[in-house]
Picture 1 (tube, rainbow, N blue to C red):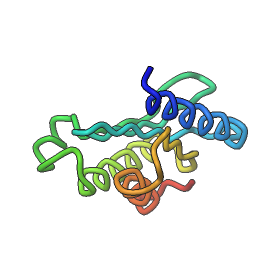
Picture 2: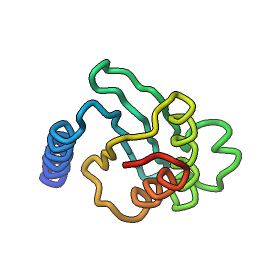
Picture 3: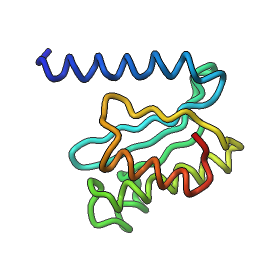
Picture 4: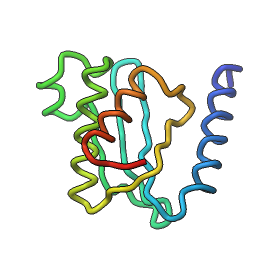
Length: 120
């Protein structure tokens, strides 16, 4: 494993550990970003199920967005995952940024999800 990869995994595990301590039964909004796309899912860790998800890979998003790797895509995915979570009856989540810094696309997704009605 490359050193930067190992550091990323350590940050990711540390973040998830802290979220487990603070979650108190709430669902987790997990974010994954690649160089070309962004993905978000709301996960119930107790049951081990994904309750809602959205990504820039979906056909409707590919048609709507110019690129899946910019702030516009992150905002749209944040809105979409929040709408789907609210439809599933979830209003409060814990935000899991993974090993990523809370800026750029990750922050844009979180802000859009908050504006769309999710609280975290």
